Picture 1 (cartoon, rainbow, N blue to C red):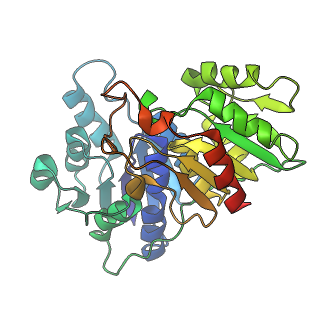
Picture 2 (cartoon, rainbow, N blue to C red):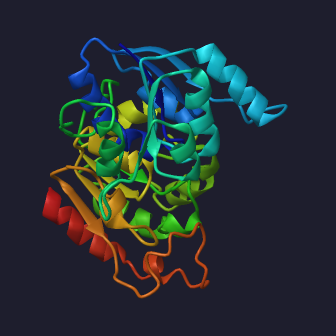
Length: 319
């Protein structure tokens, strides 16, 4: 059994697709997976023991994307089953042009036309459950979804370690403030070593926090880790403080005790999945969730109004 998987682009979304992938592998234990995705999603999920081939989707780069997609589909070849977790015309075309007879994706005008199964997930529901609903169309039996899962071993630290993730790739509206992260880190610096995380575009925020924590045992890893290293280092933490972000879902995959700060996003849809030691800090506001990359009203009160004391109190509830 050969199964073609088109992964979500974002790290967090890719991690939230793992319960559906694991459930499919439970139904088809001898399946050989071909994974296609962004660089980030492939680097996180390519370590799955049933992943036999993996490709970064570069069809956007150079030339006509429709032509590139057609050529890529022919390179991938025919599989027994194929599923896309992206709601995107080119992903539907990729599955269609691959020649795979049984295909599935989220319902849209293009998937209804191009794929065998065009699925409308149950709403409202968590994104993990939505992905399960799409994958269910490929299974003869009910899919049982479990926890998020990454096949990258977690790092072992020599003493209790607190991770701070001040970034959120989607946009500034999802980001709490460096000075407030610093206040939380300082409050726990006598109990934990501190590690700052962040991508290449989040180095400035991490440096801002570091500058406020002189004299504290702190390691700044922002912009310095591969995706696999990021997952491993987060997986070994004793405590994690983060915005709604990809690393938040990585922490959930390792059941790391986590306080997640939510502002403009739908916490019921993208909160940590089945992490027993997880706590959300958020304020109910008329303008939230707006789902915007930047605050459309200019005040950013959904995040600005959250205090460091609130996050510290949340930490006390999970440790």
